[in-house]
Length: 338
Image (cartoon, rainbow, N blue to C red; front, top):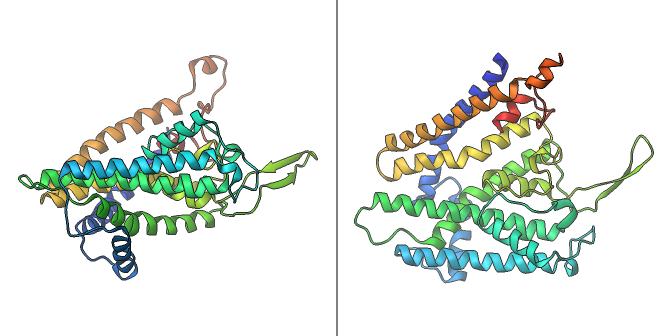
């Protein structure tokens, strides 16, 4: 444990605290249907979606209707993703000629990505085509995150409206949070990740020759666009099998720090949304503090444990800390914090 290590943790926590009311205030305006600085860009798109889908944006739903809409929406997403992974072998944007995956794996993958479960039972670079990664997995990363946020805000409305019979409109909530929060944020984040060195291409895998003269195939693809929403929406399935431990999904210390912030940013901001929507921001900060105490305690224990060498190696005179399971590029504190 070092002073510099603790400075990293304190800096991370300070930035997260500073971002919470900023993001929370913006998201509150989005969920309340108020005008935001992105309204000139997306308002016409939002209204067009409602017209095409036959949605009455002014009509709110009973909690049961809201729930049924959510279940139908995600059932359709499950069926679409299942079929897409099964037939990927005959679809375009498949430069590595990936075949359709087995029924059990397709079912497992569809359930995981629809429910935002953070479970991945395959190696993305050796199993999924570019089309599935983009149209299936990346899209579902957006929709599962939007669904979770919609349910959260419906619950908040239930607390805020003690005697109301409605909790909002599921279709409106999902549309707004996708258009005004997730999509613009991920465009910026994807560009940032490309700047940091993350691949974003539809070109084929790259064949290379190592210094020893051996042949190697380097997997690339539309990585940055998927990683952006994977981290912001706290989805576990990444483009590569190793996820954020793969250098193409996490190329630099800065990208690692930003991705750690993304994991917690929206969850922390939702505590502020709660406080604003119930009319008492102190309630939101109380929830944030409870979460923060548990988080800081966990980080402190993890950092202490990971920074100490194992007793067996110490007895042999081998010092230097325990690097087993660590990201050696970023060090012990960044690994423990992640």
